[in-house]
Image (cartoon, rainbow, N blue to C red; front, side, top):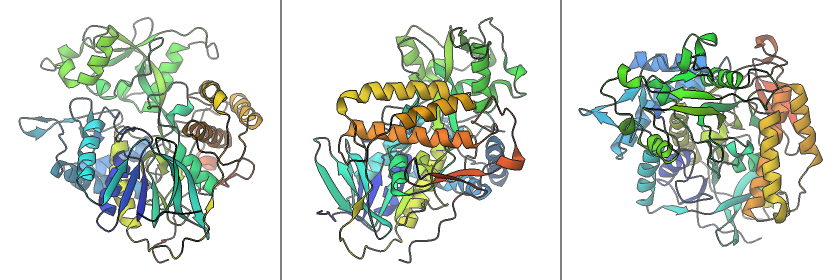
Length: 543
């Protein structure tokens, strides 16, 4: 195999984690950033609510840490959370210096509050387009750097491995041309996997490719049972599950059931600002009051009609321009209408197991952002910590990768075999997998449903022949992600954070205050082990 060596580092993903890492890496070498769609098309771009950061001094930092620990339901790695909240202000000030246009009032940065935060600390941009603005500023800066090459419509197909370490990757461009490249280190900042579910707020690119490829290459994967379902996605027939930001509830929105009653007082003292997993399950129970009777769904609504009385000077269209415009196209107004909602898959707390510098269990392979699992979110992510995580740990991964020494040779790299799937059946298989995952391994789980899903996955395997089509790569990734979620959810016989099992409805600290780690690159060889720590990976820089 001929392997190109035009670059020192490969970054997969052009969201906040990938771009921030690339900017650091470009100080010492040539960086290639690849993404499956147009540059900037990522979960970062669609992040509406904002970025949580403690800008008011040590007390605010300490409170942000406690809020993060509390939201994570006993599984947050405290050191990871400390790094997040302490380094967050520095990284956000970098964004400000680089021209990121966060919203201001009378020259001062505007701060709002979201669920489970003890004070206002959420920065937003253009009302409800925070991720898009951060992505714009980082992408603009990356384009100005002569040692960063950006390639859209380029798919990661395989990781190349030699002597037990990742030495590069095979990629496919928009015309289907396949090339292999050798680099000093690879960063997987490829985002989440919401497309594994039929109802999701994630864009179509979120198919978990980085997680799946890392697993097949032998990397450890952790905490995949913890998938966060955003409580409030627009629920209209034939319309995508458009995200209705938690910032709406931060500004005072109520949740109402089919009878017009506010119901959150029955579930949590923080009412509509309770942690997301609590709110999502409450909405589900109000919508399906007869458990198991999925045919008798009742509507649940988000109500902002009273907010003008709470905040007389608040212009909802100006505060939430993107959401208001989308709703208007479907005949709804935040100020005048009850908005029909339901939960949708939103954010994966688990992923490729890393240390605090993005190192995985495979030498020269790094991960950051939603594709990674540092333990910072535990069992349930605190609202608006995701952009901060990508920023902080993307920067740390970039710094660590800079220390990787050049490879010793280019001889005979191996590839991690990737499944072959007939193109003609991809769409139907993908849809069936998504619908089954929603039904059997979604927001409310039990052993019967999870075993049914596992049986389906085992009865519909993918072969191990190398192939090159993006559609089949994505389906294979979704199959792998589904397998990891189901196996982890079966192993955790309790309810904690975003993982809820109706057959084990209580939290069990005696047996399950641990991380679920899957090692082994195939369904047959995968082994689930419990760990009380997030990954403590030995430094690879000395090689």
